[in-house]
Image (cartoon, rainbow, N blue to C red; front, side, top):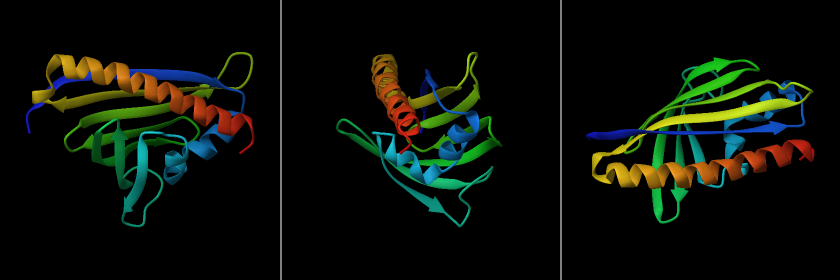
Length: 151
C-alpha cells in the first residue's frame, strides 16, 4: 500500500488527579474502549497486556469508516509515556504522555502521526485531522471525567 502525506493530530487536557492515578488508568490498555468513542473493541495478540512489545488489534469506527487497527506498544515509561505503532490501512505512530502540572494535577497529551492511503489525498488527510482532533478532544474529556469523578 502506498502511503499518503503524514497527518499530525495533537490534543491535551489538564486532569485534577495525580500522575500516578492517571497512569494506573492509562496503563490498562483494555479499558481504553471505555473512554475512546472511536474504539469499538480491543483484542490482544498473545498474553502480554502491558509494556513494550504488547500487540493488539483495535476495531475503530469513525462515522461510516470502520477498520481494524493493528498496534504494537513501542515505548513504555512507567508514569510518563506510552508509544504505539499503527500498522494497516492507516499506519503511523502515536504517544500518550503524562506530566505533573504546575499548580497540581496532571497534563495528559496525546499526539499521533498517521499516514492514510494515498487515494485519500490531501483533502482526505485534512478532513481526518479535523475530525480526529474533535473526537480525541472528546475522548480526553471522557477520560478526565472518569478520573475526576472517581469512576
